[in-house]
Length: 286
Image (cartoon, rainbow, N blue to C red):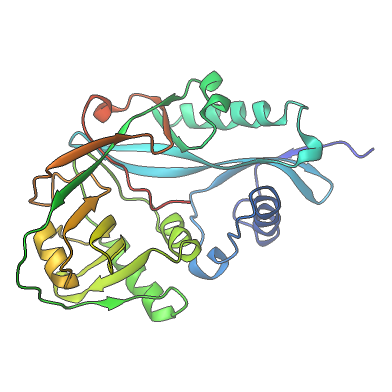
């Protein structure tokens, strides 16, 4: 049998990305191929075991640019952790995690991942963090509707989103990220219930759910200057009864009425300054 070969040189090659896309689709039934058009994150470093021309196990890192308790922090995120079923139980996952974390630890003090299986990662020093959703009732007010719903099937809308990401201000100084837009765009493409809406008067794009119902959720905000929540609600012309905010709201000029602790799937390894505070990292990542 041909031996396995370790490689870490394929994340930004066409053939390597094609194999990584195939692995993720086969293991998780998630199609990341839209990023071939929308744009991959160039900071990705992949660690993988190959059997000939087939990628059989992978762990990837990507750069995280975070604001935490008023400080800019550079860290790494872990993604695309996958092993083909026929290659499981051979130590490939542990080997690749150790290689990836060795790379990350030499360059940063913080590593973050999102998972629904935390027990897999606690042996590597990761711990779960509790996040908070914020909500309040909405008083009736004059709505000034001024928006356009975007579609990432249109090149002009992709260009608009990328432009705002390039000029993006952190949504929170307590806990937020200003990462590459790849995972944000992929989340929007794979989640049709999420609307991306351009608020031209505010020079902002919001990601929202439930805009047609009595309760709307603000998932993320991309803007060079952070508007108030009232300005966002007015620009959307939203006349519902309640707003749920899945962002740390310190820059929204708004006081929530209710805070709800949740497990949002995030785990951290290293110092994470907001851990004792109420915060929410954007869930606009797949």
